[in-house]
Image (cartoon, rainbow over all chains, first blue to last red; front, side, top):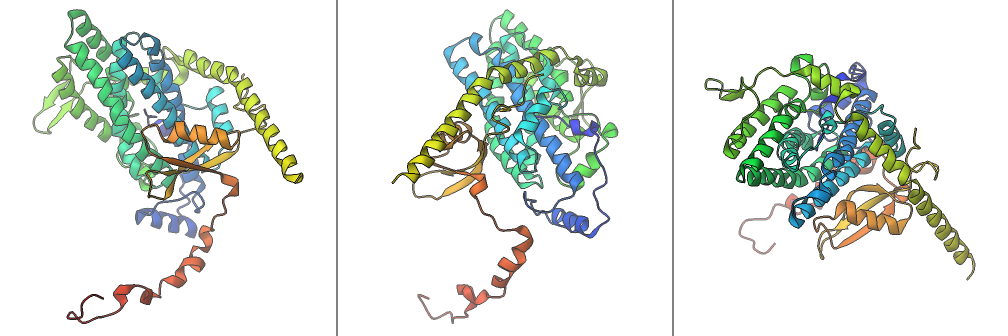
Length: 333
Length: 102
């Protein structure tokens, strides 16, 4: 899954230190499509932007396990259950790849986890919506992971090596996520009237939040230009959003479902689907912490952290004991 | 407020770098890193995090702190001297077309 362009509303130091010689050499390397690696010199603003973006992305993967995990015990068949467990485990794995990538920039894992648990870090607002029915699991795979893929594929070519490499790994796995989601929708859409209604209801609730996953429109996106210069970002929010709409609307039509937008129309001249206005007030409310599940999600992470504390302490104690035993053994021939 | 991860252990578990041999006959290749209390847990975590789709037949883990890396600032001093020694490559030598098996 994905973190949206939340960084557009952070306290970002915009200056790229472009004035000095080191900054110019750095930009020249980026312009030449060279990758930046952990020990290379980089402007502090580049480092901070990446730390924020990658850690938010990691948090999104971890929190993203919750809405779907909600349905593991109630999956309608053993096959669906096995698939959902695998998918949720993948999301956890994605979080791990990304935390590791962020750590190469000098922030510790403990710091990032602390930022998430204390509520100071952001994660994708999409995960603050509830999964009310089994169809939501289908809609998340199809729409949320679909939007994630659209966002993430360009990041595979990001200028920062560890982030780009983590993203290659993630993108390979996301494709399974999206297809299994669409297949759930396809099965429901071909089912009973009740199942079709369930699929439609899921699309009704997940469509707009998915559209908003691409972040604020370009006009309101303050830092896109800098991120593009640094090749952290390759396309603007609106460009990616439009691509997503253009490929997803025909898929909804194939399912025989109605996209919940009365103003949606095909623009023959532009060769694009055009959507009606986006209600950004909802987006910002959810971002501020007032979405349907913000408090619940954070509490679930805090509970998991607290419940796992004794396991971590035991593992650390065991490691210390083993190390001490080994040291003593080494001294006695 | 709950404690940060592994606060009881005084911070994060040690960091390990993970290397995977994707199939026999190939070398181990670096794939990423992870935290673990000890080497055995690092292998188990590496298996869960990096080989969920049969990515490998063998794993190496090594504490990141034990890796000694070259300094990017010294890259020129280390690698530049090889640049003007093109005579180390077979294509440096002009051989007439009619000479075979060289």
